[in-house]
Length: 95
Image (cartoon, rainbow, N blue to C red; front, side):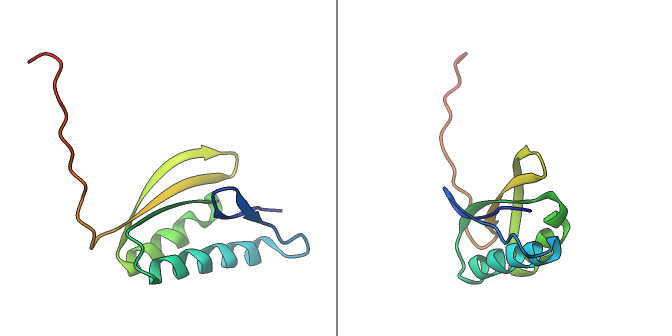
């Protein structure tokens, strides 16, 4: 049984459902977030769903950055391609 990450500290699980059902819910939730044009968000997803999530993100114009992997899950950060990158000044220590 897989826990589906909704938001920080909030997870769902469907004990009587199959892994396919869990993966469908996971992709549906991510698609709903992407359809709202959120510029950046992070979610923990099943590694088994990574290929499908990449394809959906591409269609919505998002790029993905993989983060921490724990057991069968990986944390992904989604960035809208429409959003401009955040630049910041970095001071060098040797100059």
